[in-house]
Length: 387
Image 1 (tube, rainbow, N blue to C red):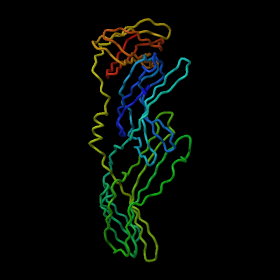
Image 2: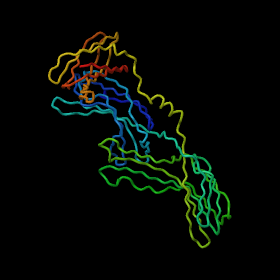
Image 3: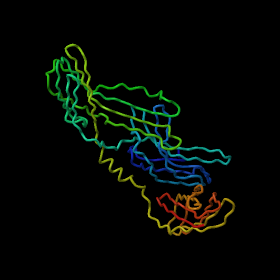
């Protein structure tokens, strides 16, 4: 069944890298010119409570009037490098939503949307350098040549002990997820997650000095501390965070059955998929492709002003028919102030044709009008008309 709105984007996105999204508005399904209040693309996160939270958005159309027809746009959706990557088993997931709000004749509004789940992967690289570790407490001393490891790598510890009859060495993973909002001072949907013991070695009657080797398991999460905090006024009180840390715990039990616990923090890193990430960064790190079209091919002349309405004559001076045309207009007052933008959509704009474009936000003290003309084929032209 045809849909009024449809989006398409890749399944994988990267924190800090814009995501290209194609959105199609099939206004022909309505069989009449349609007033709209807003159209665009939003990125949402589903929090542990399953409620949506807006992460970012990209406007496509503001208020205006669209002819019945098909309008196709490609836009970049900003993804902050502060966004917590997708972690399914801790209920941090994302989806992209294409939205269209239609204003009915009775003044009511109706919303249409299309959703697509995406997985956001991390792109940050650890900036820390490996450092040697040396720790001595009472009758135990532990040393290692570094504190930074890759998954699958061997950890080598050297130790010295005195009067110890048992050594227990553990590799431990700690979890810390946070989510805050105005609804709950403390999120009731996040349950404390106990530390996980990944490896254990038991040594009975250990020699006074020796070395121990531990192999880090494969497929571990990297050490990280991510936190997203809302930047818009509506979301200042919202945040999502996730932290993973690792440590080596050494428990020494002496002949008197007394216990001494030593903990050494370590960092585990995973190399990002460079060949995939760099390809995406090069492709989507800039604006979507814009078809070359000379601004001189569009001619604009001022026409009659009636109250808050002004009609412009616009001519397509090119030799090409244009499809799915949107003309976004706004006025500039005293250099600093803008009037509300208004979009006019045309199903087709034939070569050589002059059309009437009505702007419904005219006011006094306008210095110039700015026009943004976009089409289904990727043409994007800016024009200015002094008033």
